[in-house]
Image 1 (cartoon, one colour):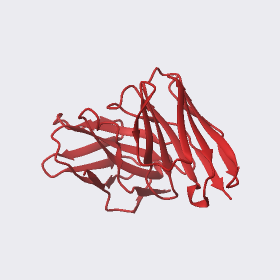
Image 2 (cartoon, helix red, strand yellow; image 1 turned 30 degrees about the vertical axis):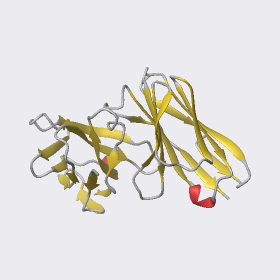
Image 3 (cartoon, chains in turn purple, yellow; image 1 turned 180 degrees about the horizontal axis):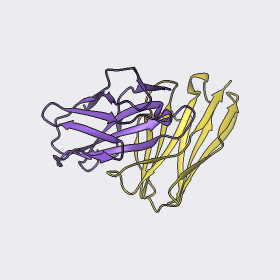
Length: 117
Length: 112
């Protein structure tokens, strides 16, 4: 069974600084998707960034980038120039590609990010 | 229109009540999902509808009954719930099961 591990229950960062959230996963599949979702307090869960396992290039979305290490099964999220609005719970998630299994988004337990002014 | 809407935002019900949660999307997505999320925990998948047919039921108790009347709507019918069923219920949709999921804001359910 696939598992996703986020080893940092809580992290904090100063505004304008950079922070990296860790995620590791376990799978026997060779092709899959990885995601980082953000869930602010009492607000909607939104997708931050998505990585396809067959792509070697790390995904980036503005201030958000990932360090995808397929062999190590590691998928960390870097937030540059942190802003107060980045404060949220961040979930790392895995989804297989295989037919019949791709519906199951496996979430990590989450990392609560606090941004200090 | 790139959003998933859910009603109601909050719901308080007794253990003998019957209520329904509603979810709607107009993005033409063919897969829709119900998740349950307890406080400070990740979402747990309950049901998946793919092309209006139930494709996954994650061994959810029968007191939760999903329904997909059409490709834009997803309901979750609730009956004889227990206090431990109190949680945030999230609806999501995607173009197909393999692509990114759009989540709704959730319905916060309290069972007394």
